[in-house]
Length: 472
Image (tube, rainbow, N blue to C red; front, side, top):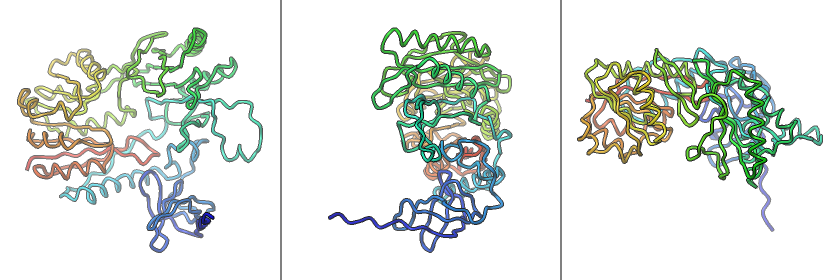
């Protein structure tokens, strides 16, 4: 006979005391640390433990006895189900306080290096509709909310377009209104959904790899341009005809779309970097603008998703770089060359390195569009590109600006930076934990002189951080 599992406990009248990682809050019950989503410090709740280890547990709040004064009323109808914007229940002024604390804790506990006073975080002026890009997924397996399941109703429509449910890779929550992007995004998505329902389009099944409609990407820009990219699976001429009929409907209903695109993806994943994107109407790109500079953004381009805060972030990076017009600057993980072009007017020469070849082509175009002739761009894996031979060929940089992905920098890259010995390093990070780890390695030759957190993503736990290091 198998042993019965011991029932997990209900913890009664527990006070939430702090904010933890991944947007969760925490409470301490004797020696047990309990992580809880969708609550805030000061809430007094009953907690149903869902998972328990020796020293910690994960739980959900099943009853509120007292609500915290820090609590805010979530404004999104999908809050608590879609998995995004987990901090809508926390007042924004408290969100940025905890992000500041997150940066401080990571740099001190993980980095264990000498630090200056950390500057107050730069909050986002916009806390709603601040993103310039969203992607929605089509699925023939709609996620039913708890209320819908309890209603015990037979639903005629089980197709959905929206966001993947965390922990359920094949289920999609139907989104009616998302507060992350300009409302035109909601109008376009819902119009496509309604047309597809009315004309019996096949939504994608990720398990069987069947269906036509797969993915929808919408980009808005500071210039007022609008890109829509529809990703479809095509197995016959009828599928392609259906796709074009839908796009014709969208083009007619939304004449403000300046770039209407589609991509046929018959693979078993949603990545499109290796696929050809077709133009149905308009241009194959849109433009972003920043301080008089224009940046071409294509369907495969990376661009910071909060345009207004990106400008503030880049200004911090440029100020930290302390450029006089005489410096050779290396911009690592340059993407489409936004930072490289942004700082180029104050540098002698800027060399950008990025592993995505299409992004490097965009970077070159962006330099040309803006009449910038003191930039060079190279494509390749950073640890393979940034070598001692590369430094010897192109010269030792006076300043290195680095903006790596969440995983931080490879140790080989850090070794070459230490070999290059620039006077200053400006480290832009979307993950203060891996940034702190890298700062500890750079501490062999560099001292942290300034730290500036920037909030790019209100109502989430994510925070950007810019650090200035100078050679000891």
